Structure formats: structure tokens, C-alpha cells
Image (cartoon, rainbow, N blue to C red; front, top):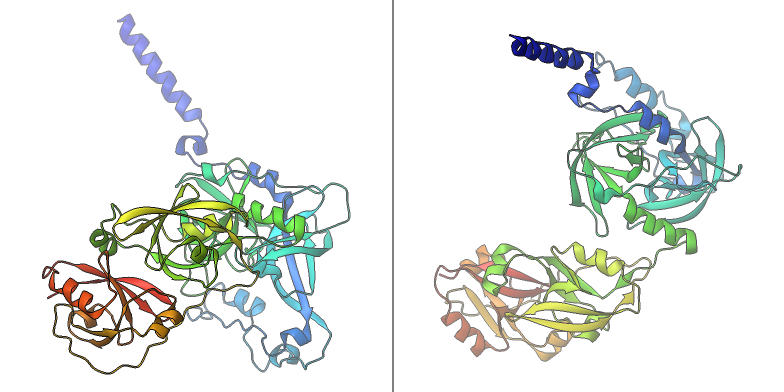
Length: 485
């Protein structure tokens, strides 16, 4: 009986303790207020202006969303802050200013955060790009005119500097590598110009490839125009990313937003503060992903690596012996899991560094050594889609391809050693997407350097078993899966 009474008392104690526990603790909901008080003072509003002449002919227009009608509670909000162009609009917004007009007019609004106590502020490149004047407003409503230190378009990171006091409230830098998918995060910024707005959500994914140089953090935190450049904050009150992009079919938030990892952004910021620009490594290759349909016929154990589609003339890769059709597996000891890994790793390598590169070529792993060059500041990837004119030729074979000898002059123009010119495309070749004027470089792991070699290789292909062709089109090459029949 005593044992039974003791057990009942114990259960009653546990029950009452559970009832006394705060609701948010029992449900696992986080407490955001303390985090906002901790990080909020370092978050700033950024507004920019530009000379009217610079905006001539490209004034922005903000039409009311199609789904918005007069009965919607947000109708008046949108009509007030984002009026469509019309007869009631001021002439200076409706009509482009004349060239030579030196007036400073509002250009845009964004967010940012103070990263050092002496007044360095981080934001997005697109927030300050094209601005003549930058103004930073703190949470206490004090406004400072900022000086642009540097801006990097490729990573969408910019740094500005404010002066006016010895110590500014700086945010604490966190480690995005410790973030876990499903973890709570929050954003502070100025969506639609509404300063100090706090929104919360979770980390939806990590390492999203939406740019050449950055693996983004994906969240479902509400991010809208004006949030750009603001911080993504973890549950320790530390910044782990810069809110930069959203995925949207309407222009508004749809539950998917992207943040630049703060460790990547700080590397850029450090260079901008030191020299005003970012120095990146370059090896001079055009690349593409490796698919399973390509990996299997080539004997690759998995579909990882970066396919070399083109090699720049007189670039580091060409000097080191990298060839079109190579699949880069490692760079300077680091594995290349997908094509987007390569520009990030190469870009972060100091120019002049001698590196070892492992490639998959003709069915085996090989190593080459090259010296990393420096990427020009405004270099942009370019591809040519020139198709060579051709006459029709017989294509009665398992691939449906008619080929002819490739002129030596054409081979030099394409910077390839050998190949055959495709003159007729039929059957399986049409289905595979090949075109007249393409240059066939290899079948599976076998180089095609002549028409007889092509005929011999095609004759040995088993019917209905996928093969892979290395094809050059214009200035770039690609592996093309095809099923002989």
C-alpha cells in the first residue's frame, strides 16, 4: 500500500511540474525576443540615391499584383507604397528625367548590418550598385552618409563605411557550417521600406547551387524587397548569412529564400576592406555537370566531377595539359563532387599557386600540374553556338551519323587535336540532339581521329546499349548519350 501511495505521489509531482512548465518550453518553440534585442541594434536600413541623369529611361515600375483587388486588406498598402504609373502620378516619376539633370533622386532601399565597431557595414552588391549616395540609418533613427569601400558582383557582397562615433553596435559573426537543416533562424531588415522588421523560419537546405561562387543557405524565412543585405541570424544571436535572393513566380515571397553563407561573405569583405577589390584564381576552362548517363559508359565509378567543355587559349589549363572532354575529379587535393564546386575552389586559390589536378581521360585517371592564373575583374563566361555549313552524306549506321574528315584549319580554330565533322543527322542522332556541323571527338573512351576510325568504332557498338559521344559545338564540348539501333 505504501508503494502504491508513493507511486501515485510521484506521478502527481511529475504531472504538476509539467503543468508549471512554460508552454513554449514544452512545445519546443524558441524565444526570439532576446535574440532580436541582442542582434537588432547592429542591423541597419540602407537607402541610396542617384543623379536623375543616370536613371534616365529606366525608372522602375511597380504594378499592383494581379491577385490584389480592392477588397483585399493589403490593397491600400500596395497602392500607397507602390503606385502604378498613371495620370495621378507625379510627372518626375512618370516621365524620364532629361539628360544632364543633376538632381539626386531615390534609387532604392535595402538592409545591412555592422560587422565592426569602427563602422564597416556589410550588404548586397545589388543594394548599392549604381548609387551616387548611400545613407545608413541605425535603429535609434540616426542617419549617416556612407562611403563605398568595395563591391563584388559575382558574390553579391558589398562593404560600406560610416563615421560619426568611436564604437558602433557590431553583430557577432557565426559559423554557418554548424547550421542544421530544420534549425530555427530569423531575419531582420526593411522589407518594402518597413524598418526593423523581424521574420522567422527554418533552414530548408544547405549548399544550394544558385550562383557560380556561393553555395547558398535556403530558408523559408519571409524575405521581400528591402530585406536584401540584411542578416540571417541563428539561435545564438549570431549572423550566419546575408539574405540575398528569393525564388518567386510572382515577384513576392513564396516560401523559398536564399542567404549567402557568412564565412564566404567575410572572405570577400576582408579583401574589399584591404584593397577595394576581390582577387580570384582562374584556370581557363568551360565546364558542365557529369550525368549518370555519361559516367557509366566512360567507366566512372559515379557521376561526380566537372566536364571540361572548352579550354581557353593560352590559359593555365591549356599550359598544364588539360583537354576538352577531360572530367576534373580533384583540384589541389579537394574532391570535385559537382561542376559548381570547381569555380569556388579555383576562385579561392591564390594566383600563382602550382596545383595538381586529377582528371578522367580515355577511361583512366591521370594527373596534370598547372599554375593558377588571375581572373580579370569583369570576365564573363561566353559560349559560341556557331554551326558549320555542310553537305549531306550517307548516315546508314547504328548512330544515324554521316561524317567527313575535319579540315586541319578548322581543328586549329577549335583548338582540338582531331575529330570528324558531322554532315548528316538521322534517327538516333536526331533524338540525341546532335546537329549538322557538330564535331565528333570520341565515342565512349575512344578518340575519333578519322572517318575509318569512326566506322570501326560504330560497327562494334552493341545495339540498344547506351553509348556516349564527346561532341564539340562552337567553342564548347559536351558528352551526349545515345542509344545505337
